[in-house]
Image 1 (cartoon, rainbow, N blue to C red):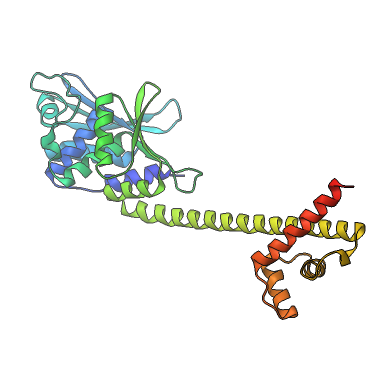
Image 2 (cartoon, rainbow, N blue to C red; image 1 turned 30 degrees about the horizontal axis):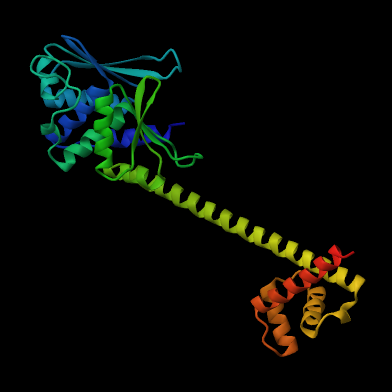
Length: 310
């Protein structure tokens, strides 16, 4: 079964931007999943469509010799796709802001690759294709993450994400830097930013369903808790009434307290609101919920004193 992350990557990999967007995307991919020496650039991915996208980026932008080979991953038996560029790669690395003029690694990409909004989005697409993953919204938790090799790049990506108010954070994990987003709505926003429209529709449908189900469960739990609270209150009031009747008799109470006792015993499971409405209707006088509650407090006090003086 194809994972949600793979579906998102398949959709993003099918998007073809203009040359400046493609440069930003390819730069992000090489910076975060590429290896290079003097004559080769090698990128390994488990996603065939991502591999094909990287292949076309190299071919269309630089028209250089590029190949795709596949092999079995010895760890999980998935296929690995190896995209390899051979020849004079120094121009490519400099053009993509991977290295400077002296072939020294640049810890952060130069700003000229990120001038426009579309270029920033394209860079985030490349980041997700190279080292990103997102949980299926059907799972128990929402989570989007990127594993980055160096701290400067991680902080750069974190700032880029937070430029879209995604509330991302960075932590050190397993000797790498994990940039992550946990809020459901923010993850949906990220999918919109990288133009994964099909993934957005799926994600939002599941998220809304889950939120509605959770709200329904919370309301049901609250209703059940209220019912249990009402039953416990009624039982406590009935115990107090029976104790007074046993020790003193109901005639010891004044008329208002007598009425409260009579109607509580007659309607043992009614809430205070329901009981006040019934009494108001049958007695012909308005009795509020708070007024009835006051009467039961008096009854409780009498029962408590009788127990103290037993």
